Length: 346
Image (tube, rainbow, N blue to C red):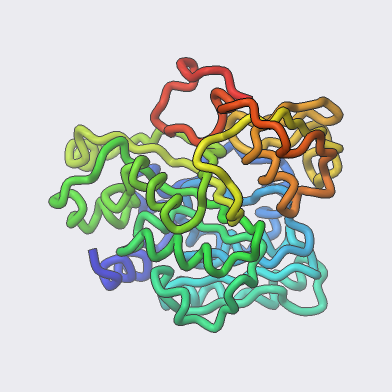
């Protein structure tokens, strides 16, 4: 599918989220109250031109420098600009003129809404497959986010590699996207409506895991996942027998992560000090660290907490001197696995 098809669909065909024909590019209603409070302050025009599939508001954002890939009309950029505070900065990249026109027209409005002396946002037109063409410094971002956009990219590996290069060491790509339970057939991939609806460009989740590791994100962690339903019976028939999940992953730029989650007898204690998470912290779908409780972790998880922006919020027990074998049940998992059937995790 060509860039021009996607630009046409998101710039001219879709005028609001009500024009979508499936629920693939829609955020579920459940979200934390602090996120709802931020969204309530955003300009209506920004909100109605939103086509995301998940929530991309990780914890611990104060002062962070964030890049949003495929920012559209800027909903997530502006929400994140509130969460990073006046000392943080959020950059949005998109290829669609109509969407960027909406986004850029409301920078001063949102700065005033959040009580900032000047906007802490910037927007660039460009393709997320060629991030190196933009005036962005390598290794300059703490966090890179994306919301239901990587599936629209013509070269998914190039997107992930570009993101990896722009992150600081210990930085994180935290993004929601649509995944398929098998590889999408060519005929379906060339269907412009299914592509625009975030379905036929979806990666097979196994290919995503391989590509992420290939570019340097060595231990992808699934945060949340939900099945997608297609209420339009005509489109539903066109995607059979495939099924799709909307899944949020976090990928860390840590070059010492191991292919498997290894056990070194380590543990962490969460201090309860991250904003909006006083009682516990969720690293991913199977690591819930209750405040004040000793929590055994594998070596990879230890590094994801110790060598990142989360370090000051944890106490760390142990080192890498003694190896006890594989830490069973830890690490990456399939968004299509039945959660009730999965083994207990660390």
